[in-house]
Amino acid sequence: MARKAIERPPQTPAMHPQDAVLVALGANLPGRAGAAPLENCIEALALMPRFGIEVLGRSRWYASAPLGETRQPDFVNAAARVGTDLPPEELLNALHRIEERLGRQRSYPNAPRVIDLDLIGYGRAMREPVPGDPSRLVLPHPRLHRRGFVLLPMADLVPGWRHPATGAGLSSLIAKLPPGQRCHPIE
Image 1: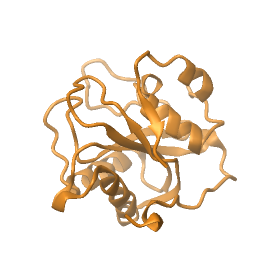
Image 2: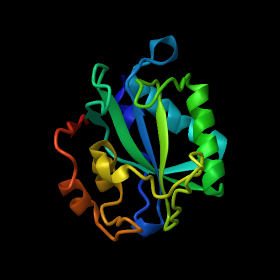
Image 3: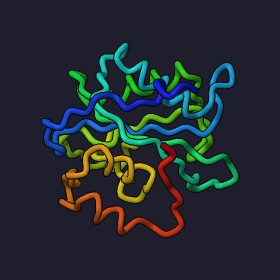
């Protein structure tokens, strides 16, 4: 793959880390026409503007071990800071449409996937889960503090970010990760 294809989009340092809209990217299966997981992630970033999502910055690419069902290939992961006029639910729906376009099939939790796009944070927005409503969007992402493959890319992209509910910084969250998570930069 040509080096140009994996260059980072321009960064926008003027934005306060707490105001960032953050999307996590991941893939561990080949896509259509045999595209490698990294190519699937790059294609997802390229499709975002067509869905009203401007990519403002991206972390390095990471390789990470799968969580849960571990008999599957390693993942390629990154985080992106995006700009959009879409409210959170519409942004999440747009991310799901990009996943569908790239061939994602939702079979079971933690299944291998062609692409996974998660809305990690929407500025300072906080939304608690509602008992009995599993479809409610929770912000920030309810499991981000337990995922090295999300926190390490976020530390690249928005090192000053703090969890809006707890005030914990990324270095503190990374230090408290559950043991056994393998995640390292690949570029």
